[in-house]
Image 1: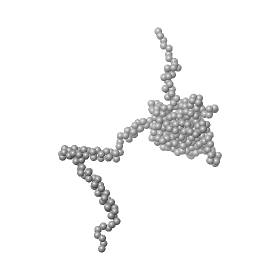
Image 2: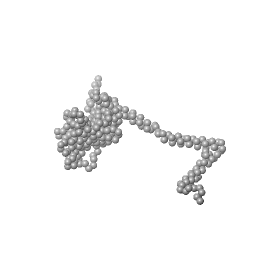
Image 3: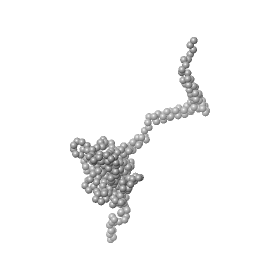
Length: 327
């Protein structure tokens, strides 16, 4: 009796078979954001977009501006002319650039470049490791009232020594069902009935009818978390059906003017064809005589010429009194 030895999961063949799955879980495919049997395609949003937050250092005449630049689908391209120390490392998909502005001296100075999330090879081999949650099937009751998904993207520890792990949390909300866009000021967090304007977040247009809004950038346990809200039609669960319906609607319906031209053309063609056939069978006509009203058609240039002559004579003779001269 032969006893087969169990195949180890660490065998080369098994590892090769698992590589595509592992690569998918470590990277982000914007065309197939999937959770709990629901897919989203946010690939049209795959271009750099920036939002800014400002913090006023009152009573000092300084403020800190932090600009977060995001490419949700691929690493950001290096900007030309920017010193290496003033930019995020290669592989960064979400980069925060912090600058100090002195309103009294009217100066701006670079402070920090913060890699929030991305895939890095020189920072401990940090993977993006996306975590996707469909809001309608979330364990949170408040989330289940929304339509869209939550996306977490992970980054390196920053600073390298003694820093905290970074990550970005996007809440993608269906633009058609989300509440109307709120103001730029932060929400009232101290309960005094007024917005806190010591820190403000920008709302950016994503170029596809949606908006990206900065929420906050704060420490949560052992992590530093950037929270963002993205309202877009691509977060709607029926986005694909709507796009297909809109596309077929645009292709399948012509305007009134188009139909009017087509009807006039077809009517004229039918009249000429039927008239030519009738002239051929009834009068044995040939050549130009086949065409209905051929004599009138041949006279059109002369009729037009005569009409133009009358118009010119009328305009030139408009100043005379006409008739007999007074005696």
